[in-house]
Length: 380
Image (cartoon, rainbow, N blue to C red):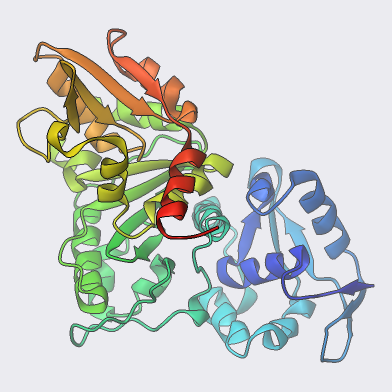
């Protein structure tokens, strides 16, 4: 017998599947200890009596496994779908409307897309971002209102496309997973997994403009020029950087579409970094923490840097911004000077391989930065 308690791993997995439809076995580490999660999935895939606090118990499997190898997925078992109504009044209807009434397309493209969405959603949940669509305020396209929550929240692309049906054809080929709203800002979210990110040209431009209008009307945000790119590891970011240099259409390069592209790996460090990137006014607060006012660049000049200290041009890569990193490397190739980059330990390998050896790297702890932010907010 299994008791489905709110907050338990089993409850969280079913809640995740109600949002994503399926979840890659390969990425169970984003939901908890990999060994514990695999054992839980095995137990949940066996017929058993499931006790629902405050409701009648049911005899059923909870999940089923489909696919092979890296494509292997966990999905809800059809007999367990009524449990969604017990979890939330809107969960069942959302699931059935989003996932073809529990009839999943069998092609690899649909499955890969579902996996990208599932991993990004899981990382956001790990970063304490609200990810359940039927718990979020409904977005609208009628007038400027502050619709979005004060908490960081993820709106999936499939739901954004439903806000304005006339915009769907403009964004149907985009690779965005969704939009992440946080106090004062909005990111387009991408997940390239272990592959090189290949941007779909005008589709991404149109997607950014569509998201910008949604953000303007629902959060009062005039410009959306930032994206979060998730990937399996820092080497995925490295491959994406090198691929961008081979692009024959520079106007379609990702750093032309978005002024800022923050790389966030699909691991525990990435979850912490994403937490930093969703703190209100995080960039100004980070600059104030790192540099005195009299040495900061404040965006002046042609070189991409943040401060000039003791004869050194200093760039902060603590936000994982690949677009700024490209502009920085392009500038130092033609400008004389001494250069230094601030980074977290997890970013060192990428920077050491991408930047010239004469650029000095200085390491700072991510936990130290987050702790300082929490102290400023009066948190224990």
